[in-house]
Length: 279
Image (tube, one colour):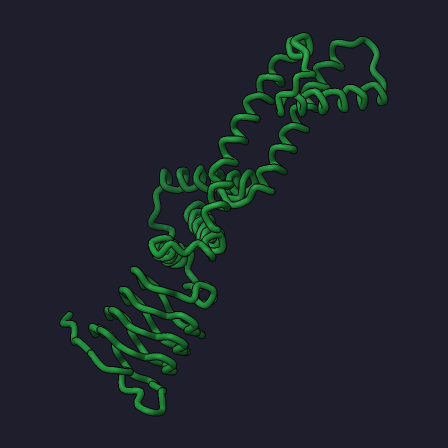
């Protein structure tokens, strides 16, 4: 399809600063100054918007299907009821919360847009909304793989049985990552998951200790459980109070606690790096 180039100050808004019902589809829109212009019911589908200045512009019910935005500025711009399916951004300064409020309804389209949005923001060195984008992106990915697994619509019925099996494995992995460390975004989730695993290991150690005794009461089991929790926590943080005899008494749970220490530290390092890098 031929691309018609448009080079105008305000896309014909004039002194009224308002454009309504115009079709800019398939156009090359270059070096536009549309500061404060209001666009209503306009279509920019399959267009290339390059070096546009849209500071404080307002877009209402506009269509940007397949639009390519390059080196444009949308600071303080607002979007209401806009369609960004298959749109891409490259080197653009964007009002991220506004775009997050205008995401496509289909999971695969939403996932694609969010990946591009994340890449655009990181390319600019802007990490202010990085966590919000990542969480919405993972939500869309989970919804997409869930749709593949269940063949939820006609679109997903094109996937084979092998594709659905791989989608199920991916879905399980994403769920585990979400609860273990929030997809690399949450130290709190990592701390909570580590505590839960230590409690599980303590319970397993308590069962082993109880089985080695002849008579067991509820109070004895509770005391053994508390002892196991304290022992594994001390082993996890590598306190000098841990005795070799205690480790030998339950080598499996002790080894798992040590392994958990290094795994959790390894997962915590990139999360801490992200927090520091955002400053």
